[in-house]
Length: 402
Image 1 (spheres, rainbow, N blue to C red):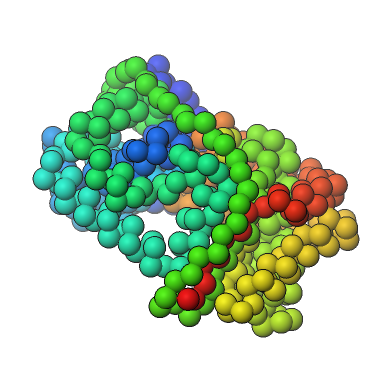
Image 2: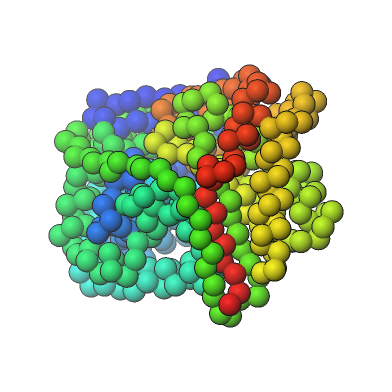
């Protein structure tokens, strides 16, 4: 795939990343290199609020027209906000790629942020906050970051009722003008399109502007908490630990370790917790690796009475890995991860996001080095990382029935 990849930073500062494919579909996203990491505690949720508002109307299109132009041509449109990126994307037949570029560039440049629409969308986000709280699996994932980091980074990305109520149109416009400039933007495109057309379009549409960006210091911690709630039947728990940052070759050891522990039905913890003891239905792991922060987690859904036992099993398994992991098992996990990586590229939309994430970490072209980097990981790196998950070197959060 790397031979079909191109990357260019334009004179106006905008970065274009592109992977050519010969199927009549194209996925594209304009993304801004900012998110929760750029927010103070009192403005938490502003990046996510802006994401919502960019679909609510521009100088050229109503909110309905924004959706119609994509959907009536067989496409889909959406967006997402993370700690270090806010993205706006669509996927549609490649013959309509020009329409997608037109709509997305319009919302990136000409959104109106009307007061009336802001108040409507604020209510929508309040409902989203409730939805995330009401879903125990989502809730514990949101809360584990608060166990791993001090505020403001530890606070929920979506914000709170207090912070969201403090965000007015003036603050939204200020943040939009400061950050939504070409120097801080990426266009990621995967599909059947012409790279030079992308370059010409973006050179014409976007003019160079000054970037005003601010990152808040990320302070790590480790803490534990058990929260009780009425009206739920299952206990949901997460054990997480800080792992090497993106750019550190040992970050790939973290991916191997989590896959070994909870990367599917053949993983160690799935076998120990579900298959051998029938203590849970869901056992899974995840890594969240960035150039500014990085952590790995294990999630389990179990009964209230078994929370301590499950936690002890997780910690015991990390200890076992630190002592008995061998080259044969390591190779098997490497092969599994390489296979997962290859499958992840199948869908153009997923690959569009893969490249965006890699670009945020430094350079999208490095995405194609994943297989080489995983293959280079040494047994000692994985065992050393597993040995650190003990004592006070991890965070824990559980939501249990009251």
